[in-house]
View 1 (spheres, rainbow, N blue to C red):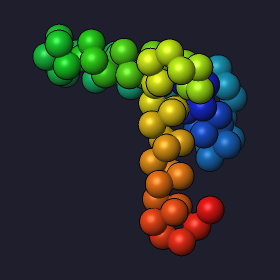
View 2: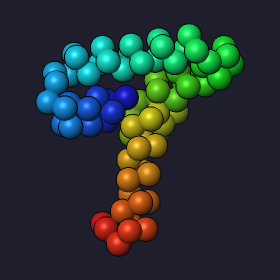
View 3: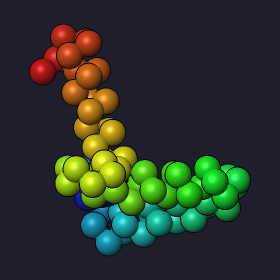
View 4: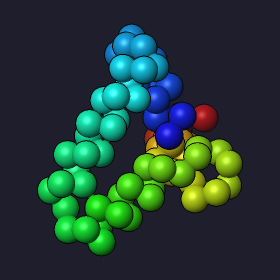
Length: 76
């Protein structure tokens, strides 16, 4: 999740604490709207520590998607 927080702070200019609060708000909203089994999977995905090799997390997924798309589009 640290990578996601960094991406948000870089793109928006808000503080790390504000980014963390925004993520928690979105997670609460999503958790309330989805069926419990799916909400738990989403929370597990978001809770992984990016780059740790323990569960991945959305930060890892975003990084891998960026890398893949960059290569697909002729980027680095």
